[in-house]
Length: 287
Image (tube, rainbow, N blue to C red; front, side, top):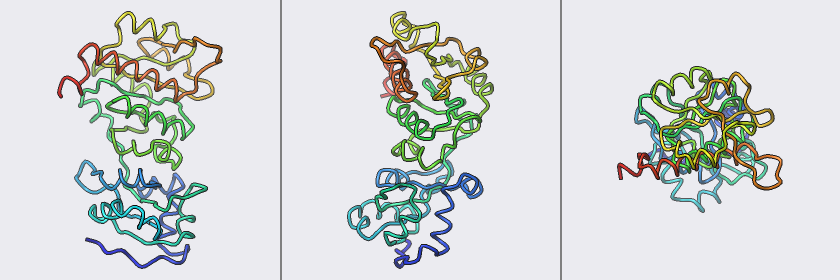
């Protein structure tokens, strides 16, 4: 079991500098490493294993106070083979990308799954993020997909970086729960999913289909992928044209619209409920 290193006094140490640079996308891509902050994300990272069986969490920085408050997390990190550094609050503030750090910052290996592997698993519920640029929204949609029981998330090449610190925080650990493919052109994503027998629904406020009506007609019990667009301008016409149907979430009150993450949660849960009702949800039929 790797020992806990001496407290890192200087924010200018080599280990701190290596971790701090992961706040930038180009260094994350070069090192294939990202930051996971806070007890929930670090706990999930410590328990996760990659496709090769190797540990995902490779390094943990913790203040003495945080190490005393979360001894189980520190123990799991050590058991996973991560090097654990007891760090000063100044060091944690240097590495962290939050205004009020929680005293735990992990360095994790990339998690993304090849698109072909996702297709081979024959997923029944998928979220496709096309042109989603806000990292907080991307992380929240990932969390919604995880909660709804989706079996995969796909980020197109026009979407935000999956490992942006804000996206990782917003997912609250869901990065470690389900397969995510990144950098997939939207045309390829849709074509591959259709070949795998998945119906493609584009979520758009101006859609010609109503979500309530689709549920009432019983058309949503089969394998489904929801395509979600940009926060400000939605889905471009060429992307909507790729879908089997363009569906709007009905607005029954006076709100002008729903934000991206809220609409995604409504759509994904609608599909999850329809699949359970039709006996088509894998998590039910195999339990």
